[in-house]
Length: 275
Picture: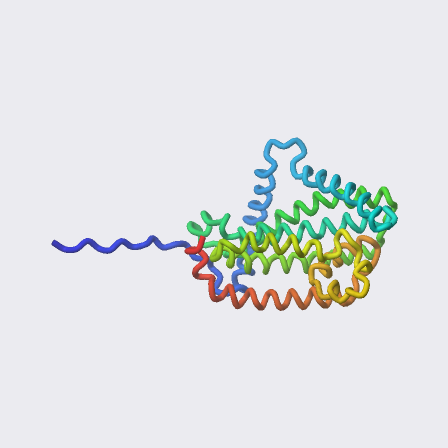
């Protein structure tokens, strides 16, 4: 009697991109898909909620007001100067932190799609970035209210927030690909990333002003998160971001994409098996 043929593992769908550049461009071409997926994530998250994602805005407003009055008293800073600073710092940090945290689960939560459909992996990264941009748009209402209360009018300088936001999105994209792949392979990485983000939050000038660092200002200047927050905060406060902030953010973007390209090219074919 002939021996039974060995069982073969059913092939899994592979993405179309062969390297990170090809994959990123192919993912951009699927903008209708990831746009719908990101929007649906928001709808499902706040399904049957009376005010939907504005609950996030409300909770942020309460936290900003409470911390604003508390720390303005501790630091002996005028509330009219401190509260807008704190609000914009929280807005920028919330977007950065959520993109990094949710980026860890980018490919894990897309397991069903990855195993059944030949989609570019960047599609799922864009999904995460897009839904956090939607949340950022909702949370920006808090800044608008604070600006109206304290009479802040940044003028044409506010337009500088647009290239800053583009740089943030570019970095959120490569981070999503990089940490998404690493977390798919090593499931211990997400809690490590979460712990590191908590530490970075306290050493980044978000609830405290940079000048309070005194003679330790070098540690602030070497913190890339501070520069990314400044690209959003400074223009909306009516100040142009420092040239050093632009240079640091552009350098981090370039180095990040190069590192991501090297890692992605090596592990792309294995991601479907890791998830």
